[in-house]
Length: 367
Image (cartoon, rainbow, N blue to C red; front, side):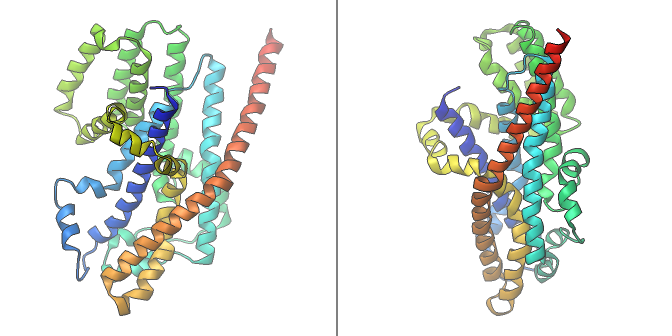
């Protein structure tokens, strides 16, 4: 599955999941509202049915984690220096976009402000009210990479709570990948068993890290020829099947998303859709969609609700706020991708190149 088209498919899945996270967060405002008259009967039916997961933002995040673990596991990490270099580079690959995203959102705060507290009072949606309750300064922007990646403090972008654990998962994957590659692709039974045990260990500590490791597991299975015929594979499949009966439903969700990554590409219709230029582009701007949809909904969206509700009513003001916020978020994501994301990639690459020279020079000096 190393083809260019397959990676377009993976990118399309990532963009699709971020789009549904955005929609899920918007719908949750309505779902948590105590006073919304008149409501949306059809949406109410969906939200109280077995397919309510479609509008569950947290549900679709797991597809994002799975894809992240799968892609990180493709890294070539053959020396201890590579592990260090990859970990530092991964930090900056997160840090620069976090910093620039915070900068954009801080400008939104200065120009528009956050009005979700007032808008939430109209619907009595106390969940919507709980965000952006403080005052923010440029210092929040300057500290943002450290706050998010080390202390899990996400003052301006609450969805960033997942990034610290994704960062930690990346480092774990680099270490495990190094352990395997340094053995010359040998001892796959031991490596596979260690990976399974690591997944079980983290399953009680962090669903995010666990899901990333499951993505790595799938990547490993791709690398081992004839793994379906290996005795250890059959053993762990049976053990896993038994443990699933007592596991959190979260991991059933992860298995479903794993099937999207493994099997759906074999269905031509789905492969064509998710590998299309539109979905591939959604994947490319997925960071911006993930970052901006909630601040926009709590600023511009909230203002629309406040301004429209007295004359147009709750449903019209809410739907307009969602549509406008969604469009603005996509436009911001588009602009961010071609400006700050490219700048972030350039800066990360420059730092990575500098560190490579330093490590190469120090190792040459020791010789």
